Image (cartoon, rainbow, N blue to C red; front, side, top):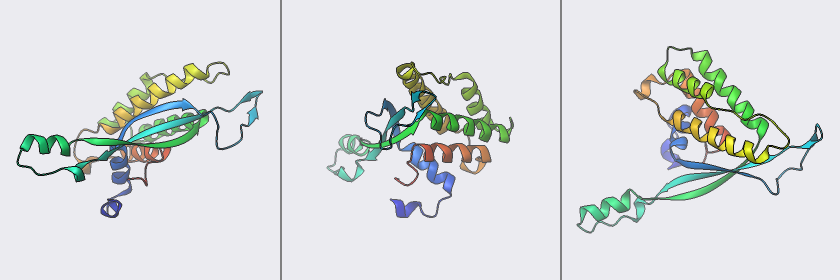
Length: 181
């Protein structure tokens, strides 16, 4: 499949990769890859993002004459786990980058207006030493909301604005799925 995507634009590859994301679960990394750095008398918390990617099972479909059995097997998919580790500051940088991308486009584009209103309305957690569990749950909710709205683009593919392209590429890079599909 990667060979079929070589002629696509970068934003289209990012959109394709994000469409394969089923859901994202957040956990606190028990053993981070990098050493824990102590700043401001508190540890830097690494979050493990379990990115569940949809993998098609269409190659398992058998044509046996029954149309319903074939359709049910073709439409099914399996989940493949992909893990990424990010810090709270990485989430914050993503939030500010998304805000910058959609505010540059202005309010002319319906997609950028929707993403901007969701970013304004959705609670982004504050930094706090004793709020690790609460912050993790809020980050998970925030990321799911942003992913949901980012994948819902009204209109034709040709009408994708600069803000839409930037949002899709930022999310694909953040989830580290741009080269997986």
